[in-house]
Each structure stands twice: as C-alpha cells, then as structure tokens.
Length: 322
Image (cartoon, rainbow, N blue to C red; front, top):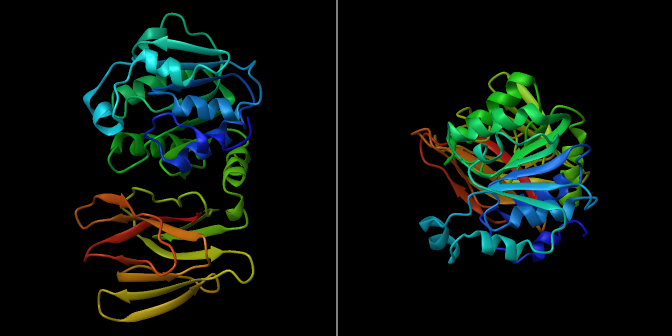
C-alpha cells in the first residue's frame, strides 16, 4: 500500500486523521524487530501500521480484550468485539492477535524483539506503566516507541512520556495526539513527519520557555504541550516570502502587530489574537487556563481569532497544512 491510504479507511476510529497519517508514516521507518500494538479497538491503527509496513513478512502483533464497552457504542455506534476487529482487519497478512489483557496475556510467552511499539490501551497508571515496563525489555536499540492520546485529559500519558524522554535526553514528537520517540536515528521520525506533511518540510519553530530555547520541525507540537510553562518568545523559520501576520491585543489594552516569519513573536499577556496566513495553512495552540488545565485549539486559518481569558497562557504551538 502507498502512504496515507488510511485517509480512505472506513474502520471506526477514535484517532485523529493527522495521527493516523503520522502512524502510517512512522511504521515505514521501522528497522528491526516486529510491530506490536496494544489496544487496537476496531483496527484503524492496525490498518495504518500495515499500510506503512514495507513487507508483509514482518509480523504485526496486537493485543486487546475486544470487550464491549458503553463508551465505544456511545461514541462509534457499535459494540467492540473480536468478530468486528477481524472483519475490519481481514486483509492484513501476518497479523497475530492476542485476546486478553496486556501484558498478562503474553507474560509467560512473549519472546519477540520489538522494533515498533504503539500503545493505545490503558490510558492511566499503573496499567500504562505496567505495559511499558514489560515490553520495553524487548525493544530493539532502534525501536520506534509511540502511542495515542497525548492530551490534557490523560495526564498519566503526558507525564510518563515526558519523564521517559527527558530522563534519556530524547526528542519527543507529537502530531495530533500521537507521540513518538526513539533512542537511535530520530531523523527517521522527522522523515516520517515530512513524508506525511510534505508542505511543511521547510518550516521550523524556535520556542523559548523561561531561559531555554528549543527548535523543532513546525508540523510537530513544540515543547511545552500540556506543560504549565508559558511561551515567552517564538521565531518562525520559513521559506522566503512566507509570513503569518499576528494582530495581538494584550490584557493591558495595548496592541501589537507582528509579521511572524520576519520577526519574533512574544505571546505573553495576550487577550485576543487574529491571524492572516497563506491559503491552506493553519496554526494550532495549546492553552493553559488560570486553573492549570490545558486544551488544544482547533486549526486556526486566515481570519480566525483566538480569545484568551485572564490567566490563560499559550504553552505550545504547531503549523498545519489543510
């Protein structure tokens, strides 16, 4: 299959389309070991991994109880079951299904090297950490580690992924709600993002929190996603001629207009923001409220406005091409 065939996949899903595109591209960058996903639901992620897989000779293992749950029917309109999963994944070759709770169902039998690990199962601890601690013993040195729902509503995922990556000094990449990191050759993840979102390949973001400045590819969320630290300053590195005009009103009543791409933009103290962007481009923000809760905005296209309440702060941002 070619990249981004998941766009035409009719499998019921809870993942964002951007996340599935990213997952498919990530799957194409596996270098060793098998694929393992935990919590596939109806198989949208399984199909994305299969679509990115370079060869059907590489095994995909998937683990789920496939038990019906009220939230699944309420959100997707049908009950989860093994029969439903098999129906939506019937074309996938070399797929090994383990029905039961992870990691218990394979605790006494698992021996495969894992070169690609995707977790969309238990979203809280101790379940998330139990899965990670068990399966990480089988990760190859260049394994790509990823998962879904890096979001304010799932703080254990956010805290655990930051803890693991920051302790090891690894780069963290997040597209939609899909997070990813690897201990070796992390350019593969950058390449996956460029494959999935080629119109943003030439863009970087430089973002300052407190006294530290970090630079990352603009399609991925900048550092600070669902963190409590506000962005002090951001610089957009873009192709010549590409600019985003930001019209900002501050909480103190002063206004500022920035040609972001030519000059730095300092969003601290913003009350309202209006953006002028080239066609088909958008900007997205993570905003922390005065109560400390974080939430991502929708993609904001040219002419869109963002209203902020007193105490709200922007902690992370990314560009998108629609």
